[in-house]
Each structure stands twice: as C-alpha cells, then as structure tokens.
Length: 392
Figure 1 (cartoon, rainbow, N blue to C red):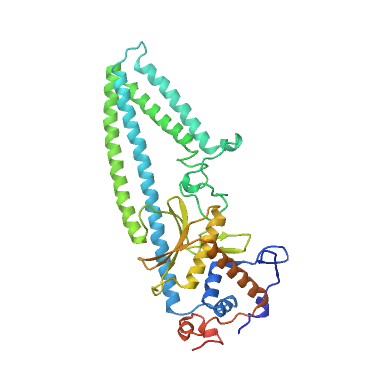
Figure 2: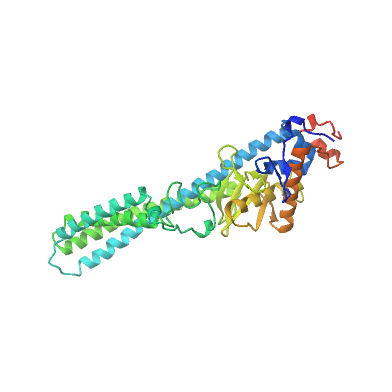
C-alpha cells in the first residue's frame, strides 16, 4: 500500500450524490487520464499525482505518434474546408451564369420604351443598396436587436453555449452568427444580389439596344462559364486532396471532425456536476451524432484494455454533458485498422461514476493500493522506477 504525501491530500466531503466536493461546493477535479491510470493501477495514478512522470521509450513514441495523428487530422480538416469553400464559390458562379443566360433570353424577346442605359442605372443603384445592406447585416448584431432565434443545422442541434464550449462550430466560422447554411443566408443573399445586379449594370452600359444587350449578356455568361469551369476544377482537385488526407488520417468516409486534441490549444471539456474533465483525441460527427475517438499507439490487444475503456467512457460522458446530446457509442482505435466501439449504456455510465467517486475519495483519504499481482503489468508500467510495491 502506498499513500500520497499529506501535502497532496485535499479537504473535501462526500455529497449525497456520492461525489466529493470542497468547502465551496465544487466537485474535485478528475481527468480522463486520472481514470485511465487508476484503472491500470491505483499506485500508478498515485505516483502521477505525486509528480512522478512516466518514463520509457514507449511514452516518448506515443507522444510523437499522437502529434502525427493530430497533424493528419488537422490536415484533413483544412482540406475539408478548402473543398467546402471551393464548392460554395463554384455554386455561386454557376448561378450567375444561369442568371446571365436567362436575362439574355428575356432581353432579346421583350420590347420596352426604356433603353438598356436606363436599366443599367437602376441596376447600379440597386447593386450599391444591396451591397451596403449586406455589409451592415454582417457587421451589425441585428439578430440580437430583433431577438431572432438562430436556426441550427441537424449536426449542431441542441449544442448549447456555442461560444463557450470546447467543441467549436463545425459549419461556420467563429464570430459569424448563424453561418452560411443558417442565419447567414440573409447576408449571402444580399451580397450575391449586389454582385449580380452590378454585373448586369456593367453589361448593359455599352448596349445600344436590347438585342445588343442580350448579346453582351450571353458573351459575359460564356466568360463566366469559363471561370466557373476553372473553379470546378479547383473543387475537384480539393476533393481529391481531401480523400488523400482522409485516408492518411485513418477516417471513414462521410465523417466530419468537430474536435481534435493537440494538448496545447484544444479546449477542455468539463462536467461541473461530477468534476470530470478531459480532452479526447478526436470528436467526429457520424450520422449527425458526436462520437469521441481515442487513439492508442502501443501494442494492439485482442480486446480493449479496461483502462482505455474507462478513459473512453469519460469522454462519452463529457461529450454528452457538453453538447446536451447522448452519443450512442465511442471508438477505441489501436493503430489504423483495429477499431473497437464502446456503447454508452447505463451500466457503463454507472462504472464511470463509481470510478470518479473512488478517485475523489483517494484524493481526500489516500490509501491507493496495487490492484493486481501480474509481474508483466508492473514491468510495463512507466512509473515502476518510483514504485516501492513493484513486483519486479
């Protein structure tokens, strides 16, 4: 048996719900890594809490491997954003082509006392008005002024406190309320309308009659078609680069990445009720659900280790408490091919809460003991050098 040093013991009391809270009523902080170490061996957890860091080549290789995995995932997210941006630009340009062709047909088949120059002036004024309105809509918090509810896409439904949680927005940039697929359609429509009206006005300025105006519009449409084709080529290249990045990152098709941990800038997921906190390796979106993924870089086991499962259960609970949505399962990933799904069930939730409460109890009372009699486990422990109860 090995107690933590008295200086590391904390003052707290067990609450009615079983969690241990300090004098201010806040639960003691327990990380997902704490739970993994405790499930592996309570002595290893105790030594880590006393400041004994893990040593060994496996630890160093694991850190390097995790950094490589994160970089590959970040590259996938970058390529994914590039593809989305390219497709949005192409769709806008193709829409403009359709508008030009449609207007050309209309201009060549109507008669009116107004000249193309008159129409060009009206369109110019309308273009400026729409441009100003679009810019004001982007920079002014008009939705807050009129208390307009923001529609959320299915992937983000029920995700609370978007600006405050660790999981970032997945479909729109920070600081832009709504996003292009949501409330931002108003801003996008105004800017797109300003572009279309302005291009029409330019095309009509040099038209002496409606037939000539139609010819100019068709010519501009052909030029714009070439530009749209070039943009489509960029989109196809971006799609190919995305597929390469997806394969390198070991991600399944139709998978979106909402979160990736780099141990430096990634946000911390926190549950204020239990005191649990942590950073999963990734959180991916599968069929509209947030799924935590934990990457393991050591030997590939026949079945998931208990300690790894406990860590993943912690992330499942953190995803639920952060997003307000209960994930159906989490994924333990050993290497690039060996995947294990862990259901987020009531039994697993009970195991997790029991482990959190036990770790909190040890933080207050001490008394951590070795939970096995396996020499091989002690031999593989990265803190064996500081353990006085090692079997080897």
